[in-house]
Amino acid sequence: MMNPTNETPAEHDLRRLRTLYRALGDETRLRMIGLLAEVGPMPVNELSARVNLSQPLISWHLRILRLAGLVDTQRQGRATICRLRLAAFEELHDAEGRLVGGTAGVSRGADAPGTVPDVR
Image (cartoon, rainbow, N blue to C red):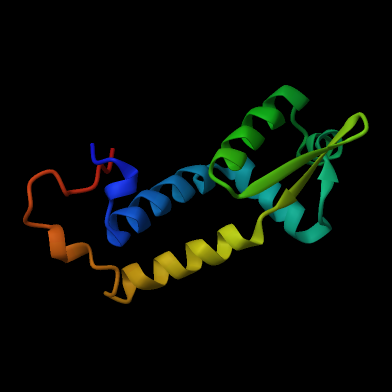
């Protein structure tokens, strides 16, 4: 696997898109994002109640969203407040635009060994 510091912009886009799509590929996480978009920042316990899942399960989903950079959490007293990172959705939109617009540069290294992205 190539060191991320040496990856091309196209490889970075593909890796980032894969990370974001995997995080967004779950209905519960999509509902959580929808709620945060509609209602705004909210405590984990409220998010848990609105999605009707246990707090440990919500926390597990939040961890995935946080690692993907889609959500931020911040302690406020005893509560943990969740909020969307809108910049991540702009980044997703931009990377998708480059990919489907044919300007991502994916084909430049396509003939080189080891450059085909992992699509497990």
